[in-house]
Structures are given as C-alpha cells and as structure tokens.
Image (cartoon, rainbow, N blue to C red; front, side):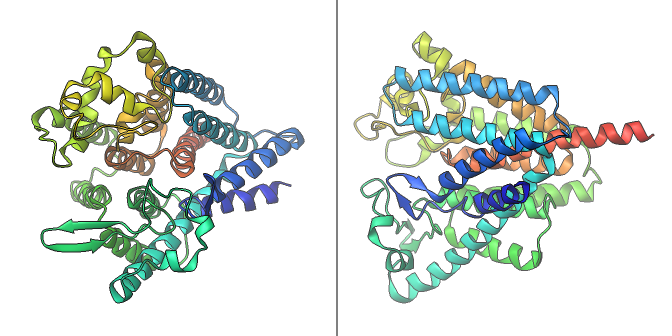
Length: 410
C-alpha cells in the first residue's frame, strides 16, 4: 500500500499546475489529494516503525488547525462562504502531508518530483501554444478540450490572455490554466527547485532551457523578475563565497520584505494603472482600521477584497474605478496570508516560514526566498502552492533529523 501512496503522490504533483480540465470548480489535483489523504491515513495505521515523528510536527499541525478555524470564522464574518471550501482543502493538504511525514519524510520527494514534471509539461504547452497562436491566431487549448471542461470560469477569466506593450499585442499562454500568473509562478518555482537540486531529474539541462523560454514567453513580470533576481543572487553569493551564509540569506530576506512593505507608500495610485498591485502589501499598515473581529479572524480565503473596499483609504478613494467584487482578492499572496485568518491565522504562516528559514539547508532557504518574491505579485491559493510550501516545511524537518543523526555519529 505504501508503493500505491508513492505513485499517487507523484500523480498529485504531476497534475498540480493543471487548472484545466475543470468541472464545477473541481480539478484533478483535488481528486488525487483526496486519494493521497486516505492512503496516508490507512498506512499510518499499518506502519510498525515510525521514523522521525517529532514534537514540532504536532506544533505545525496544531497551528494549521488554528489557521483553519480562523479562516472559517473569517469567511463567515465577511460573508465569503466559497472560501470555506478552500479552507477545508488547505487543512486536508497539511494533514495529508504530515501523515506522510509520519510514515517517512522522504516520501514527500515523490510529490516534489511530480510537481517538477507538471512544470515541464506546462512549459512545453506554453511554447506550443505560443507558436500556434501567432501562426493561426487561436488558443490551441480551446481547440483541443471540450467546452464542458473549460467553461466553469466563463465570465471570470478568459483562456486567451492578451497584453498590450506599446503598440504591440502579445499572447500570454498559461499552459493548462486560465491565469498565466498562477501557472507560470509554479513553473518558476519548479525551475528553482531543480536548480537547487532539491530533486534530481533526467535531462535537467533541457528542462531548464525550456522553462526559461516558457517563462519569458508568458510575459509574467513577477516570474521574470524573480528568476533574474535568483540568478543574480546565486552568482553574487558564489563569487563572494557566501553560498552557505545564513546571515546573508536573512539580511536579503528582511530587505526584500522591507522594500515590499514600504514601496507602496511612495507610489501614487491614479486609478488608471496597475500601481495598486505595488500598494497592496503596504496596505497592511491599515490593519488596525478593521473591525476587531476581522483583526482576529480575518476574512477567509475569498473575502480579502472586503478589507480593501472598507478599510484602506487610498483604495476607497478610487472605488468608482476599481472595486473588489464579492469573493475576490487582491493579486498578492504575501498580503493575503495576513488577512485570510487575521492575527490568529497569521501565526501559522509566520511560525512555519521562520521554521523553514531557521532549519532548512541553504538550498531550501533559496527556495523560501523565491516563494516570497513570487507571492508578491499574484494571489495564489491553489493546491500546488500549499503542497509545495508544506513540502519545503517537511524537508526542513528532515534536515533537522539529518543533522541530529550526524551529531550522534560524531
């Protein structure tokens, strides 16, 4: 049964970046997550020897339950009930992956490897879609898939994303997804996971080359900037021989967060551009402008727009131009995580990230910095984001285990 769990974990990773096919909001990742949960639960009863189940796993589980409860209350308070489903999926994600850790923390690499192959497929589809669109002026995904599997987001998002740059019109392919930002951020993260050798794959050079081409073809500004920053950061650390410096990594991380936090304060939103995206994270300075219950419990997974509509002065001034409709959030995960579950829910994210950064090896810290950068520009609450994040968290636990075993031997 353990081999069946390994196989399904890989499949969960493999379909992670596929928001299509979609039927009434359910995607393939949801199905495989449920299968993995039941298999992990069954294996937990059958296992005779537990390898590496630590006290802090219980802390992580407890805080994730607190976060879950806070987002549920937040969704009810903001009347954003669709967020309840996302809260359940989050908790299911965490429990499944912690059960897998209970069995064997190395199992999680099956998911990570599947995620990388999902990124590879996404990159190939992006390249093919680009060639097809500029040749025939049609999105190949709309030709291949039946309408019943791609119509569930009609009116909310189009499959054919177009962007105007100067006097030129460019196609922004998204792979098997509606949103270029969400799928390409996953592709970028997978690329960096491979470059950091978190998992090893065959034909690594081909994967890296195709991924870089796909990222630039997608014209995802957040992904391109993140990739360029990562390369400059890696090269600089290597030249200065600081690859393993925890202090440098910490300084860089805190600098990034400080820049993001204060950047929006120096940008004037005129109501006719995308400057608001740079101001979202800075809007956390208005945190105490909220109702006390929202301060504690937040707005749930689909109610963060309520905070901006009612509590952020600069945003209210342009409510006649831009306004968050019901169940819509700003495109900034870095902002949203502090508002999904309020102060109580934020404890989960703060603790888990500090845990990753303090206990992960230098490669894991590089991935963590990448996650922060990618989270600034897009609102990501997909299964893949939670799964990769918890995987990195588990690999940090595994790193502690490895260091303790090494200390015993010496």
